[in-house]
Every structure is written in structure tokens, then in C-alpha cells.
Length: 310
Image (cartoon, rainbow, N blue to C red; front, side, top):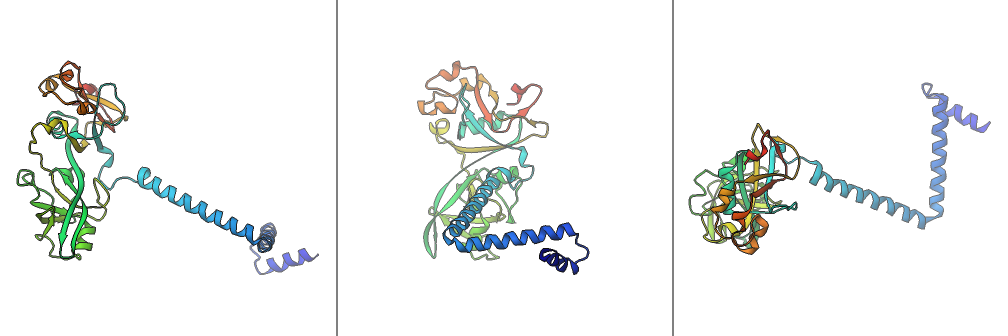
């Protein structure tokens, strides 16, 4: 009788709610009140349960944040699915081959036909000297076509010209949005100013968008990459990260696709020291006897005759 009275009192003001819905709602409220009373009677259990829920939700939030940032989120570049990482592999090797040498990059750039273009970069830390003292900041050296290849334009100013790599290294700099705001106060007249990095005055010619951070998060400035010959280390010193944009007629297929560079170009290479074996050549003149030097692309391409891609 008492239950029926409560139900009728509860539903009288809400004629649109069905009797079944009202009964279910009342039962749920009763269960919640009972659960609250039990939790008050066992504060230790309540504390453990709350902490478990908080830690579980925090761990899930952190996991999915990392998953989104690393796997699910698309890079902030136009037609990002056309961009691939170019690496070296020895014959029969399946693991990542890492970076390229200066000579290898120039060879691939001149001989390949599968890419619209190739761009190279390296990054490190430089000493920034300002009125506030000296500090270490991340700096990336990139080829002049890097921004165009990624389809990213500076938010202010311009990128590097084709002659930037031919001039003395470090004459111009493109800075990040964060560097502009934190170190230069977001000044409107920043273009044309100079910043001193590793003892060299760099003229600021552009400011990148806030979302741009290639090739590493937190890069403060981009400088022209000096591709002038370094002598014997040109082919043995591997330090360049190379990215390419596939031509319109090339269809991405599967990871691990291999395309070959002709043996003829290999024979013209000088002997390579043992530490360069991972780049696709062995010590001495084994390269001349090999059938090919291979380059792997993290995203693959498909053509009727894939061996002609390179």
C-alpha cells in the first residue's frame, strides 16, 4: 500500500511518464540511497573504491591521449597520406635503416622518379645568446624545399629560398610561434631582426604556425641545411632524416616495399668503412658485387613495374 501511494504521488505531477518508467526510477533511487548508506558505514572501502575509479579513469585518459597523438591523429600537413619516410636497408634486412648520408640523399634525389620531391633534415641543440643570458634550444637544419614539400607556409614572412643552401650556412632563420612569443614578446616587427645561435647572427625571415613542429616537438628555429661536401665522410656519415612526397601517379601500397638503386651507381661509390654497412653497403668493395643497393619506404608505392620507381 505504501509503495503504491509513493508511486501515485510521484507520477501525479508527471502524467506523461508511464507507470513502468516511474517504478524503475523509484527502484533506482532506492538502490542509490542504500549504496550511499553502505559506503558511509565502510569509509575504508569507500576510499579504496574512489581511488581505484580515479586512477582507472586517469590511466585510460592518458592511454587514449597518447594513442590519439601517436597513431590516430593525422599530421597537420595537406595530403599527409602522400608523405613517406625514406630509409636505407641492407640486402635481406627488414628493420629500419635509419638516416641517410649526404651523398646518398643527393643520389636518391637525382635518380628517383617515384617522388614529387625529397627533403632532408637534421636537428640538435644550439646555444641562444640574448639579453637574458644564454640557453640551449632545439634547432633543425632543413633543405630549402622542406616547407613546400610538407605544404606548410609560414604564418608570417617567408620560407627559405633555393639559394639559402648555397650561401654561408646560418644566414637566415625561420622561428617557431612559441619562440616568437616567449623570447621575442610577440613583437610585430620581428622580421628582419637577428638572433644569435652558436655564435652566428641569424636573420629572422619567417614565423611558422603554432601547430608546426617538424622534425621534433619543441623546435625553436629552422636553419638552411648545408649540403656542401665534407670529403670522405660524405657517404659514411649518416645523419639526415629524409621525407618524400609521392607523385600523383603512385599509389601507396604496403609497408616494407623495396625498390632498388642500379648497381652501376654503386660501382662508382668509393670503398665504405665497416660502420657504414647498415646503410646498404658492406666494407671494402662488396657493394660492387651486390645486385643492388636498396632503399625502403615506410609507406610503399605500387606501379606496373615497381623496379623502375627509383
